[in-house]
Structures are given as structure tokens and as C-alpha cells.
Length: 159
Image (cartoon, rainbow, N blue to C red):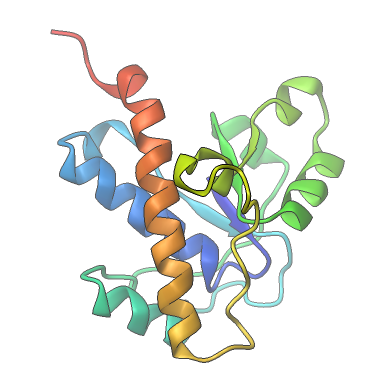
């Protein structure tokens, strides 16, 4: 599960990109990808139009997305909960009921070795222009591919 603030920009991008990476690897049926927001402002809404446009420009379809808020049950339903920035990670950590919940948390950018660990947060494009949505999508694509490479050995069925 990918988590950002309102579940209309960054986390839907990450959910869609990660699922696409799994499909391209032939493992789409073995991976569940979801997203949620820490806040409830946009529950039930489609992704931000600029998110949808950026996804479309890069060959993804985000039209089915509807925003939802993270719930404590999401700790039980997901093996990995990926925060898009450190503020989300702090919020999720404060919601963790057990050490097992907290152990499921990670930052998306922590998987992207190309940044050398120098970038931990995916910036929020909400108050920026369309170009920022493309830039953010590029960051998410790179980090999602790196995350998938790390998880793939555990996902790939043994013959």
C-alpha cells in the first residue's frame, strides 16, 4: 500500500506505476497494489486531473482510482506500507498499534539507489504546475522499479 496526504496525487501514481511494473514482469496476478491518504479530505474523489494527465502522458490509466483514507485495518491487510514522504511515515508510525505494524513501514525513495539516499521525500505537486506532476511521476517510476526489483524474488512463483 502506498500512502500520501489526500490520495489524489502521489500515492495513486505509485499504486498504478507499481502495478504496471508487476504486470510488465508477468507477475501482476501475484501482487496487490493499493493506495490511501492520511487525511479524509478527498475520500471518494478521482485523482487530481493533473495526476490523471501526467499518468496518461506516460502511458498509464488512472481513471479507475477513487481516493480513500488509510485505516488501522490496512496494517492487517498489507505486507508493506510505503509512505511517499517522511511526514506520512511519522503519521503512520504514530498510528502503528504494534511493532509488527511499524515494521511494515518504509519510505518509497529509500528503495531508489540512484539517488544515493539523498532524496527521501517525493515532493507534493498539488500546489505546483503540470510539469511538477511529470517530475514527481518520474521519481515514483524510478523508485517503484527499484522497490519491485527488491521484492521480485519473493513474489516470483517457484517452478
